[in-house]
Image (cartoon, rainbow, N blue to C red; front, side, top):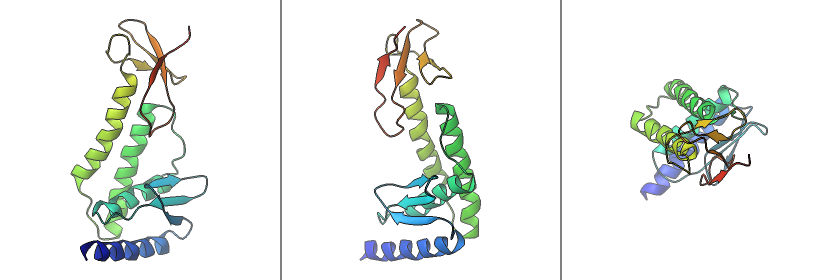
Length: 160
């Protein structure tokens, strides 16, 4: 019964958000995501209290006109900015976002970036090059990783 009440609560929230953001399409999907080219936010209804917070975060990306990211640090900066904007939007809907939830979400990106930048040769941290590949200052090893944000960061030695 609690899940049905929360689901209805989320449906009511989505209706309110749709009224305030009529230029954005909202669709139930497999994950929370902002699709800037389509001006679509996909969302899930898990029955968890954080559903609204995640929706507000995606609205933050929308408000800030976030599209692609250029580097790992650029992505983390955009994620932080979207959460900061989500906090502002939340106030207009009378919602408080749990700061621990925000930090947990940001930690997932920090952990992702850390794994990508770990040198496969000596296991120290490398630097991301403008080309997107990485270089280790310790052992001079170079490697690349997938550009995909949501996949395991396989590191491959770069051709020299």
